[in-house]
Picture 1 (cartoon, rainbow, N blue to C red):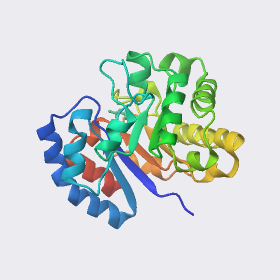
Picture 2 (cartoon, helix red, strand yellow):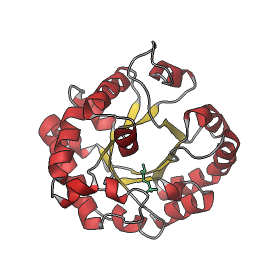
Picture 3 (cartoon, rainbow, N blue to C red):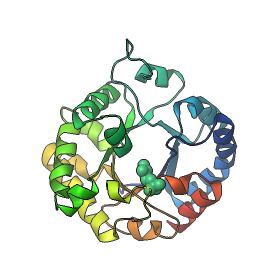
Picture 4 (tube, helix red, strand yellow):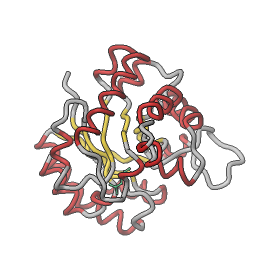
Length: 250
Ligand code: 13P
């Protein structure tokens, strides 16, 4: 079965509840457009807006931007998976580079989160990617290998098949310096090969996204690549018009 294209907006720490609600209302039109194009779409708002967005457009896929791996306990400021499930959230972004860089997230903690999501039958968007220093030192594949191997350790093949992995080179995030389509394809196909080595045939089902300065002008080129199944978009996903242009240009 062909992998469906997926366009996901990571809103990061942007939008109040009211602003998120306004977008969610408009997203009904976006969803219609995407469905007509055969593309899946979703957004990841801040925790506070999750329930509002989900209730405003129950058909839109809504992801949390993070979660804790424990169900409850003394973890001040954290949100657990049962808390997300209670408000109908079943997708979560794990291991975004901003969390790895600013909040000391490691592939080991990501692995704990992915195992907990698996136990709750929730879909992860697991982010991997190298820093500029690692890119310049030609260590990209080594870094990706560690992030994929350690992050996905112990998961069931059937769960991996339903998961989403996003390749986001840190140097391309929010910088306007998007990776070339050749780099994106090279690393996305490398990730697929790694998944194949670890989990076999399910590698054909895993959706692998590219993220990093994706804009309406460049989204099409990435999506033409064999192993790039969609995009994880930050800045260009915040405005309805820009999100619409992303869908139109796929
Ligand atoms: P930008 O699209 O703003 O570069 O952000 C990418 C990203 O980090 C998505 O998760």
